[in-house]
Each structure stands twice: as C-alpha cells, then as structure tokens.
Image (cartoon, rainbow, N blue to C red; front, top):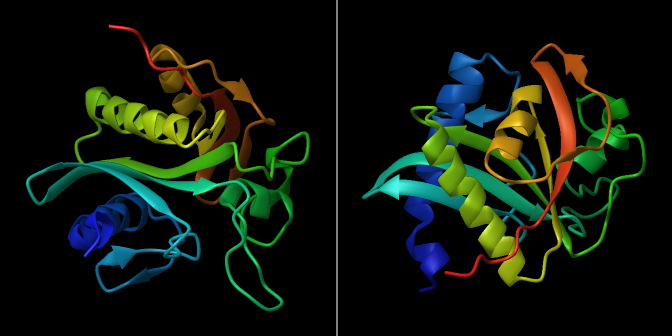
Length: 188
C-alpha cells in the first residue's frame, strides 16, 4: 500500500474541512456530497494534497495541480482552475488573466488553501511544504487563485508574487490570480 493510499483518511478530512469553510461558512456555490467538498480537480492521479495535521485531525491544507494536467476524457477535458476559468468552461470570471495561463510541467497551481483556525503560521507551513514539493519535482512557479489578501500574505512570507490579471468578482467574492517563483532551498 502506498503512503498516499494509506493516508487517504487525511485527504477525506481535508475535504470535510473544505466543506465546513467554503460551503457552510462562506456560502460558496460548490459541489459537495454529504460532509465533503470536492470537484473535478480532485482527480486521482492528478491532484496532490499538502495537508497539515495533528494526529488524525487536519488543521490546514491545499491542493496542487501541475499546469500540464488534462483531466477527463471525451468532449469535456479540464486542466486547472485558473486556465479553465479563462477558457470559460467553469463558473469563474473569464478575465482572471491578462495573458494565456501556462500549460507547462514546471508550473503548478495551488488552490483550496484552507485552515481550521486561520492562523498565519499554519498557512505558511502549508505554502512552504507546497513550495518544497514543487521544487523537488523541478517546478519553477506556482499559480494561486484567492482573495486579494492572499497575495499580500504570500509577500509577507518572503515569496515574490506577481499578479496575472486584475481583481475580479462573482457571487462568491473577489479573486486575484497570481504567480510566485518557487523559492530555492535555503542553506542552513
């Protein structure tokens, strides 16, 4: 049994936390089933989860997708959230980016960053772990989609974000797509 399969319980708990925050608390119009929130980007073999936990209790997490992903078959194929919004195939504003989003294997997207207690240290641990994972796999940049404060938070953690477009809005709130170069491993 692989480590990922052995810890599927943490992924499920992460999806429970996502539902509590995004659907129950923030009232976003997202897919859910019973007590979890999930969507097409949570595809096995494509999504990577970075999860902070204390024992079996998930305290924070995020989802990563490589930007050359192709999810699904037939007529409807998804790639990653920012690109699919720009392509007009998901219910997010199409004008998220000034230019066409990347589709290369060295670019990754981080979405669904959520924390149980919303403490900055927990979010930073998740972002730093995601950065390390992407760096180890040869990634060069990470794209983000979140509220405008998310860019300021990334900057305060020592990342160098650059907006990919303007701030846009829909019924769920205000969003900004931005990219950060992957931070290289710091010497001790």
